Image (cartoon, rainbow, N blue to C red):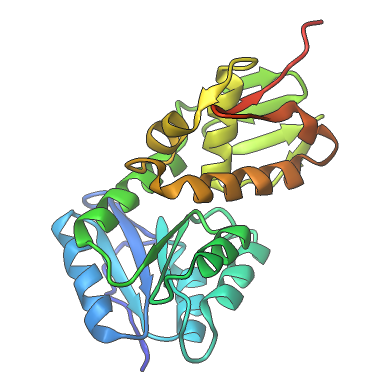
Length: 247
């Protein structure tokens, strides 16, 4: 199978200037599932492009630079994890949010995908309505804040419009979800934030069912904070907080 790209005049870098539709690339080798996802995305006013194997999907991602990618893990040509790692190695595609979609429902597979750096994860069979909510929440999170807005918090600095994050003036590569989690905690520094609030308000989930997902994101964040990881604390029985000592 090949890649199905619905070319529109004037489309460049994943955007349609005529109606400013956001573009979503669906990389899925099962055509019936790809068609179902595409149908629901189009109903919600997204421009959709399809690729039916990993290699074609990687080429499409680099060419289109979509606003979001929905990526199956088990595919011919190149598996989803390998494809995802290639996206993250490329500066042009590194910041594109990715939802991993797979038939494998085991917790270990989900955690493996998240630890690789995916922004979200869904297993088949899935609810199209829930997928649309995940897409909307992730696009909202990755959209950034008002242009030029910044926040300094101890050794951390956020540039919200570009999703750039600095630790001791060194640029650290965060996913959009990691950025929003860290920003949320820093905006409420030294105060423990409830796990439920982080899941619902920041990640857009419906409740504690995704608690392990939150822990995986925090584990990855600590690894990236390196020498400053001790400032991201786990508060037993509550959640997490960023601790910034008072000068």
